[in-house]
Length: 218
Length: 218
Image 1 (cartoon, rainbow over the protein chains, first blue to last red):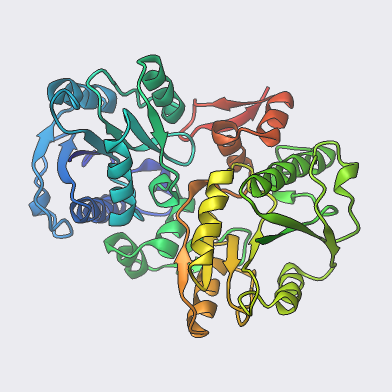
Image 2: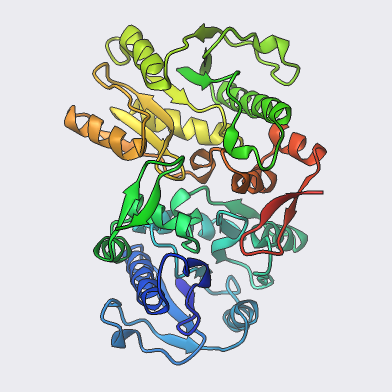
């Protein structure tokens, strides 16, 4: 299954600014991307990097895979919809998945489950915490994405309005996109890849002195 | 399967203080409890309310089920371990589950999965966001809980040290305990029961103007 992985090499995650410097954020998002690509590959997916600007993953020492790269500087929704219009999933062709590049604790097993459910339904959605759409499998050519706002609910509605069957993937690993300092604790708790190693090497450790366990820097 | 549901009728959730008044918090936790009890019941579990003080669930208009109640005013870890010592799960007896009362978006399906995995392994753990233990199935008499700190990691270690097999349940619904204002959005997005209805009737709605979708009060 082709798996689109949108990636903004030029726009580091500003909501992590309290925890990481701009150059650290740029390095950290690459470790997450590497983990996501490796897990997709292990799960039998064929990643296509959908980058906002020219980007050679093999230039990045932390990204060992060498997926094809499509460059599209339009907003995420437009770029993904252009590819869906081109691929026409389900129209005699395989489903297409769209997976965010910051799912740092996703495992091959969680992607295998996503792909398996996606093959059996019109649209399979793994919601993110906060109502986003962290991963999606589209098996019908008439479906289009809209990543603005509470896109999980919007995508359910778009699919239902188009008469498509919808399945929700109930996975903490797929629901955890790493956007805010609070998300870093999830990487330290559950992560097994480069992102978790990078955080530890950068001085982050779990701190259980507050309510929920947090990632703090020494 | 017997399912212990710890519940503090007297200690409303202080981390929700910015969103709800004390009396609202007391009402809201009861709607969550009712949803959790109903989902456990639908999944074939037999809930036992483990309350910190005498508490009659039938006094609560929002709690339609009438589970047995065990009162134990000790800290959570001690109260649960006392019951585990008494029940000796796996010693010729059924496994015992422990499920938090604030899993407001848990569904019968998520509990069925938990119970099924729990029957097949020594200890099954559904981690909460932030490293807690939101739900647990204990199938061996030698296991004891320790809810302090990052209990998910501690419980894995306790089980492994005791030579028990451990399985992690990867579920966003079971990972979502409702402790902080940010968690209320999950209830509005995914909840289908009394807690979601109560939030809407209390004036909460989703607001997508920030980064992640939030629950805001009108």
